[in-house]
Picture 1 (cartoon, rainbow, N blue to C red):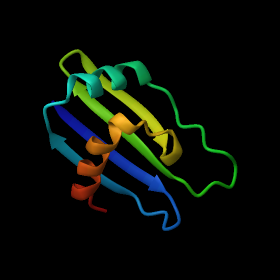
Picture 2 (tube, rainbow, N blue to C red; picture 1 turned 90 degrees about the vertical axis):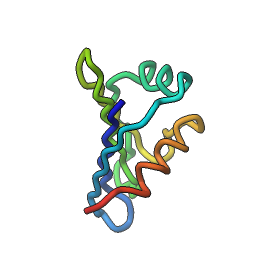
Picture 3 (tube, one colour; picture 1 turned 60 degrees about the vertical axis):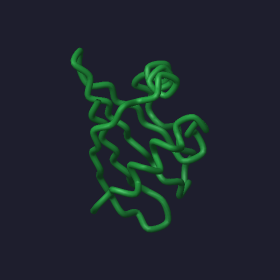
Length: 88
């Protein structure tokens, strides 16, 4: 399955993007479906990185937005892998 990550915010404010074809672990896939298309809830003045994950599914794209503090532990390995490939 193809997954795209777009980052923004944080101390540097740099925007980075990565797209990977990966097999999603069933637990991660279920978690992403559960998170749905929620938007990140960042407090005013926060410098937390923001993540926009798009899972490209045959039935349509699913977009989930999270701040650093909202990322569930089960999602960390996927996020880490995407961040390794992210480019400005």
